[in-house]
Length: 280
Image (tube, rainbow, N blue to C red; front, top):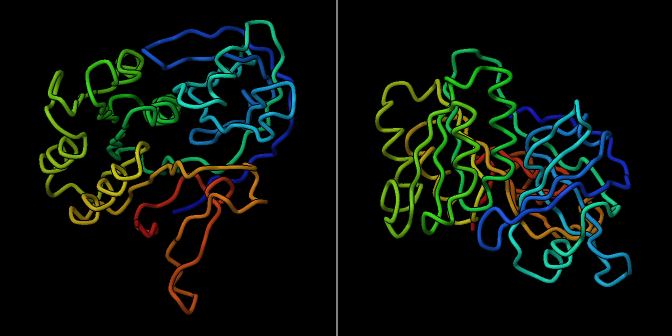
């Protein structure tokens, strides 16, 4: 899979425009950062300093949910699950936040105008995939895009209204069968691919979500002979710039003696071809 060039990153003081809780424990932050908004590509992320002091020492990575280059703004969608995200959630509008970005390599949108694009989102994995839909719609038109959004329950499905506002086809899956397809979103993916039998070579799949979900997406694509399947990995990142090697992932490498090598998710990814990932 061709890699999107690693963008020129920088450190910027970005003003927090607003924060709002869009679902229980899920927050949307909008920041003013013209340099990031104008250079970030779908699938990239930023590293945010969530405290003015050195505790916590490390920045926190957040996928870019949307970019508004004309306004010089971008947004981050995140779940409050730990100390870092709790500190971020408490930052008030008008405050300046130190942000490093854009970081990582993004999605490859392809070069064929009649390709069908299927986007598979699990939980907060919807964040970078929302930005991806923006990019796909701009390049190819929304009529060629299908979004499959999954969550534990109806309340846990994120960005549904935003996806619908794009004009893309969207189907929802809930683990508890409270809304839409009853079961995992990967089961829905199997059905959708089955409906397109014989046309697998014309499909591109993009996915982000829990590791187990993406592993199953990769398996389904392999068995269904869908050659192009890209996944955005969410390994724990520390430095975010490829120095600490704390987020490495085993990736197939036929040129090496052992047949694999470690790649840094923060810099070599986070987007990889699913066929190249050694899923464990």
